[in-house]
Length: 168
Figure (spheres, rainbow, N blue to C red):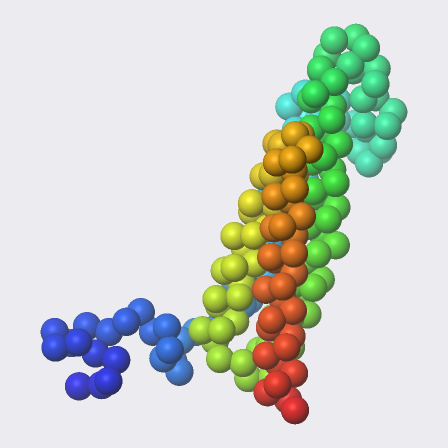
């Protein structure tokens, strides 16, 4: 019986097992879809009827104030749409840090359980980040956004640090 098995032959879920698969690529795929798809502002703009495919990046600038003025949407909805665009842009920008950290950690031979844990941490942080950014407009509660931004980035920086230690 291995040291990680119980008397019943059960094992911990491979947390420290060298055969643990590296789920980094799966996390990268998820975050690509999350950043470019789930957080895309197009969905909410389509919902509110102010999406214009010929120039979607200018929708809120060109049509936002008019939509509020004519009663199509409220000021609060327009502000939420603006925060959605910012959350989307930040997630797209931040995706490169995740890609670099997973690639460097994988190349350096950082254990898969470490990569998986850091990626899961990043995922939780970024999901909270996106939700808070879009839905919370209260100045005090919106500070959670900054905390989760740093939490996600620190997860990536941790992987880069672990990779550096392995390559040193």
